[in-house]
Length: 263
Image (cartoon, rainbow, N blue to C red; front, side, top):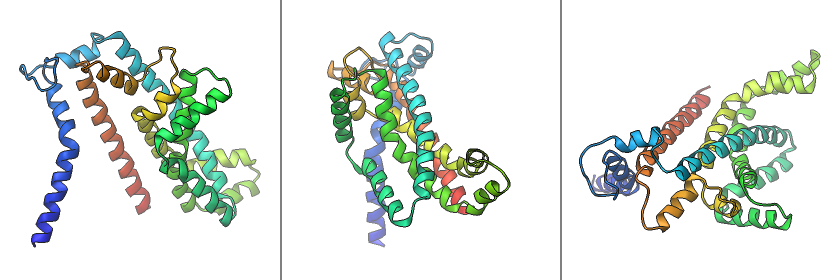
């Protein structure tokens, strides 16, 4: 009995430590105070400023850049990851194990190592860093997660359906588009959502591949803003909205995973 109480107490303490900072930001997003922790009364002015263009121009650019990069990277990595998963799945058992292990390395590797490696790669090829290099970097570290999301759907798929489509006169591309893609679509959607959230959240890879042309994403903007000694007040409602959005996306991913297991 005592062990169970201590275990639950430890769990709630851990959850409190993890989520209390986020809760504080959410609470103080409903006040006009410029300094976090100074409550000046309930107000939605920061939210209205966020949506009516009253915030800093550089912050607005950072938001647009963040979501543009995330959308492009998630779309490209979903396509590449899905095709890669199909290719890996059709390898022989030994080769498939090797490729699955190779695919897992970027996910287990520290983000800062990936960022430094891509930075050195771009420099060695003389590629000027900016929007394109950030997109390529995000595609690189998001694609393995898409492979991981699609692979379970391939394992559940009836392989005879693809062969039947070929026997009935379909070309390999038609069979891929009309048979395999519909079967793995739930995994592709989960992979896209996961890649999108990972791209928005990333800092370590972005900071090494963003260059010095003035391009900013939300993570690099917050980092630079914090180094100045404070944070733009509109970041509080923005952080709240992003947290709720990511939370909803994660719930959707988990629900889809549970539904896939039941099927």
